[in-house]
Image 1 (cartoon, helix red, strand yellow):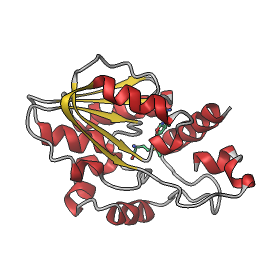
Image 2: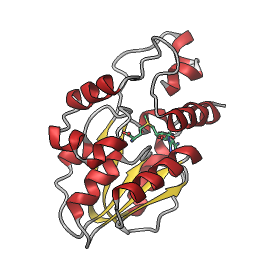
Image 3: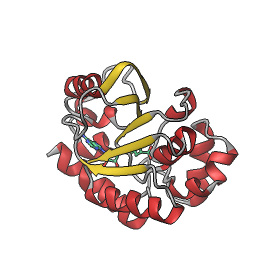
Image 4: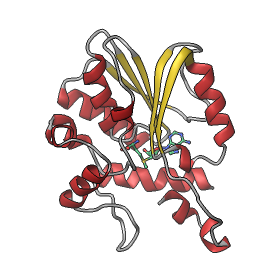
Length: 198
Ligand SMILES: C[S@@+](CC[C@H](N)C(=O)[O-])C[C@H]1O[C@@H](n2cnc3c(N)ncnc32)[C@H](O)[C@@H]1O
């Protein structure tokens, strides 16, 4: 139920290119708001203004690429890659000798990310449909796992971390931006799938 709700929500965002589906839903709507959120999330003007900036729908809550210290040739896995913005920034950093794999469970997001990759001319990024609790990725094959505001959406975070450690090479790194709960939430918020997805 929760997963279906999340997929429907992000499917609609991918299809319309608009974060906000109703007033006050907490997601960004206009291009100006999306850029503003990008600035708060510590993206540089170059990140936001470069070609990749057009793949930013303001859905993240930080900039995991900024803390990843990516090096040419590294293999990067982006969990819940959405329209592909972080994957494209990572692809630039690892260069042609490196590789980025984005995973997303929402078919419309995968379609959007693939068309963004074609449009922006990235040949070292691929987007695979799949769930972060059961990653379609080989054991010990990844140098760096990134995730931007996605693990907070999972209803089985233990499985997500088991999968992260399965796919990471020995000595690999994890860079995550996420939403953490610092105190208990009222039941009506906790049990509301729309609030969870938002
Ligand atoms: C808040 S958006 C973040 C997108 C992207 N990381 C960004 O910063 O633009 C969450 C994305 O994660 C995907 N997602 C949510 N739960 C997922 C899961 N359990 N497995 C795979 N993808 C998931 C959604 O489809 C959506 O594209």
